[in-house]
Length: 482
Image (cartoon, rainbow, N blue to C red; front, side, top):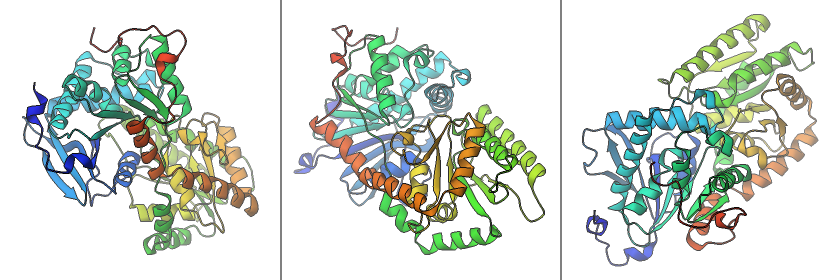
């Protein structure tokens, strides 16, 4: 295929614009309420433009070669691609979310691999590549996002695209022994190795990637680095002081009858450790600590991927646990756990967070967890709450002043809840100020600029993989299908 003939003609002066071209499975369209961390972060990172954002339209079509749907907001253009229903189901539900999601979150036991789903994943990535190739200008920088689109860089190279192409993985990168459970792990690693820059959330994720390349003697064609994603700190601070947030805070506080609030906000997902968190809160209730009867725990858990059996099982388990715990410990005037399966606007969430004396963020494994950062940014400087954070969230590498816990240890989490409830004001303020300094020093704009500057200009990246000891020189291995 001659890609040059498919490119849109470049108007005079446009080539010098150097657009940022984002590609992700879904697009955060202007005016839509965004709840996912990736969508919110990318929307904030792209506010200044100029840019193009390409992704799936959310629609199914028998012919994915239909013209792209387009819209524009300011200097940012959106291009939306329809996908055939059967290919989308195998690509998204089959491979991305029943193979890669559990595998990358260290849940080998939940991986449901089928060769035809893997092949559909590649076909859909080729469709993305073909759609994108016709939109690119010579000076565009392409930034591909997350596990759905790992092969996209390789597919673009195969079409003759020589623009700078970077990739960022928003979820954890598993260690080589976990990754090798995937029958096609060498092909996946080879696809990652095609990018000019491969970015990961934490140093642990980066090291896992480098060790996997070394173990399989795969040479990266580009560089790699750790780029912990941030939030729009000042936007959350302002949101928490808005009229909507203040109303939500006032109403929620009035409903507590003088008790204090612990809050968790998580997608309904087995990686979030919600059953373990419920059991830890029950252990706190049973501990006899003075704070045990003085806390109400609000868990907001919007359903996601409801057609996946494992998610249905988590929902049933949580409903059972909430009923069991409340049945044992509730009083006529107090329900210990409020369990809500719903989404709320950012302004209301900011008000809820500001109300909460304790933020409970205890995933079993998480790439970063931006909710932990949003909880901190929403706090009042005069009376900030305390973050109880899983050691296995990527945010734990940065947020060391939080109370870090092992989510598998119910007693330790219960102890941390009590410690957070009893923490003196001065210590809470000291911890919060230290954490906020980190959030402001690495907000979403810093994250985006840091990655794109590294992608465009090289900069202070980690040494290329080819410099690792024991790496065999030669052509890239593991890229083509066996």
